[in-house]
Image 1 (tube, rainbow, N blue to C red):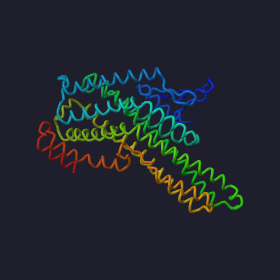
Image 2: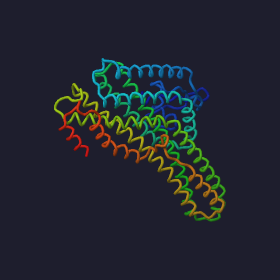
Image 3: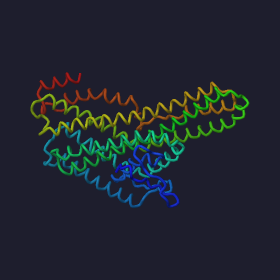
Image 4: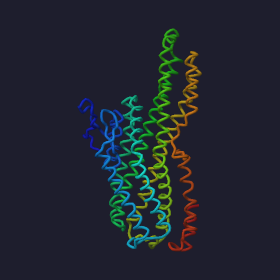
Length: 412
């Protein structure tokens, strides 16, 4: 899937123009090719790129529709198995809460992704148009991060599949668990990729403003500088227009991915909390107290915990650095304003500053801002919720009073 010999088929005048290479992207398509390919293989990419334009593909849309119907059917059957069927061996309040929250929210993510496929196509087209002004060197630099995380994340989940298969759960649950885990991962990575590209666009604007400031400070010829002022004004207006387009795209991104991102945050919080809860019990007991029959369950807890921690950290890092890059533009605009003498350019810079002030370029899910504060809050509150679980979720069915005191000491 990620072979460097694969071709990125860009059709223009009926000819193939470019080849796709791993870690060597030259445009938006080659940068996003691994992500688009994985989403297509999972039945959630009902588009095709025709003459540099995203279009809805009827065969792919039919495939996506069939896929979501099968997914919902499997979800309903899995919920029936874990809540009502006697064939599921392990039950209990913590286990049922963990299972139901994960399957319902992940299924909700798949349905929302299918419903918003049209607006998402428009968003990808907008990001493609905006990022077309980026130099190929910047695309190559981005590809090292984006291709690496997509490739390593996919390999990690593929390596984890034998653990799912060997676990003592129903076959339908295994199939759905593998599929929905891959789907949610690549949808989250698609969101992160879009954030990284928008961050690069903000950085491009900031670099151009820095170059403008250096030109006004260190230019030795004042006559030449005055002659160049109209061109600087045109360039500044172009940067102002680009900033407005990128800011509007950030808001569009927040609207389209808000429900998916909110579900991801909740899933991450619940999975980390319950996995830590199970892992503590697993470490503190010599006999099986959480219906674990072999070492596979312990391996699953550790790998799952690592997966959700790393994924949420990557998403938060991208959103935090993207927000900071957007804020940096305001500082650079004021630096240019303080170093320039042309009144017309000053007036345009002041308007640019007001535009930046009225645009909130933060990445959020509804009213939940995705930044370092969110990650801190998640990690800081996990221990509190573990204490609540130990005290109120029928602990007596899983461990005695002595183990409960030890677990509480570990959390503190």
